[in-house]
Image 1 (cartoon, rainbow, N blue to C red):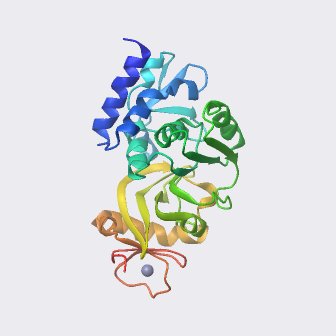
Image 2 (cartoon, helix red, strand yellow):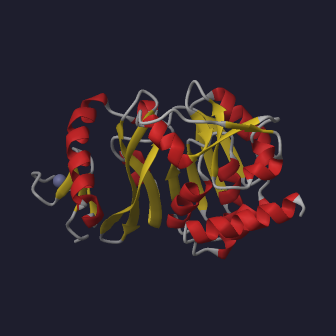
Length: 294
Ligand SMILES: [Zn+2]
């Protein structure tokens, strides 16, 4: 088998594991060469499950070192910086989040926390040359690597900057690739009619990692529909976290996850209201609610 064959098998595996509905997304996984984004070998790989258990302090993660590109075509996390917990994330998890974006050819996409750009390339393949992807990373070294890795995609622009301040301008889809305490007003404002935002609402469980729920918001004419896509563990989003919201979020989200209430989410409310039982996560600018869009 050639490396292209291994990549094709990997794409089919991800399609099955992540229940992908988009043939274009499966095709993108079959086309984008992951090894080109990760820097020279050797690479350190680990299963997402082991990494999550290690993050929770249950076990010590065992990383495997390899210089064989075909080993990257499994559902594994590849470490980029062990000290900072920076990884090229689990392919099936990212696939399910990208799948939730319902990308179409020609869409304009915002990828916050693009890392070395592998999943940015996957999204660029799906939206095609008529679409565009605005990618951002707070770490200049990662953004520089992404910029170089993505130089073959004229529809991608990579920026370095603070995700809390960066204005992506109007978008059809946004993938926030770092754990946050709340959706930012600017993201909601910049979502076009019918636009989709996918962001991880998380509790910080360590200085670098958090656990929580991946939330999908869709801008409808009457308001913002919202639902929980999946539960997850992900890197904390630095400036994207409001220190004052950490303590109440810890209490509220833990309870909503334990009781399954997070899966009753139906809308994101921006109107001023007193918090009540339908508020799953109530903040001054945005409330995730069990009430449908009115
Ligand atoms: Zn509320």
